[in-house]
Image (cartoon, rainbow, N blue to C red; front, side, top):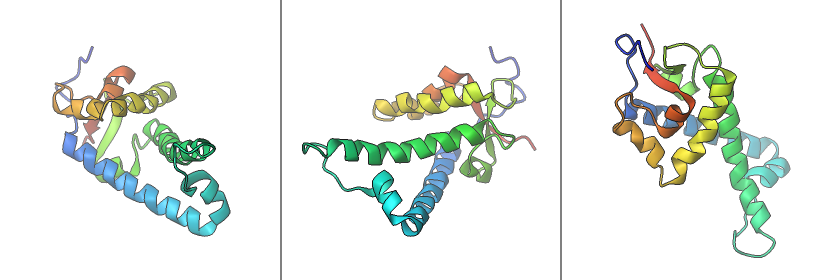
Length: 154
């Protein structure tokens, strides 16, 4: 149970949304730079045009979409459990990912949190919007991993 709620200020949905938009923008720039620097490599992983329902193209379509999600999840896993406690977007918004006592999360919690984002996204993104209705402003992925997103203490 959360025993220290009086000293932790959980981040609002809007701050979390802005942080995500910043991160997606930076990811788009990174992928653009990879595309320009290594066109053959990036075409295989990120940009291969394929219709998902044409025989033989399904593998390419799934691979290109999975690669983007994979890069995002790996990045998030690494930085969420690091000493900075969150992605670059979260740092820009002065918010951070912590355990329920305000401490840095473990690698196990970070892996769980970021893989559970798939669950949060799966049903029309409702797991993310759940932040709007939850007392502790936790999305499904936060609840499942026992994490909070808090305003950075001053």
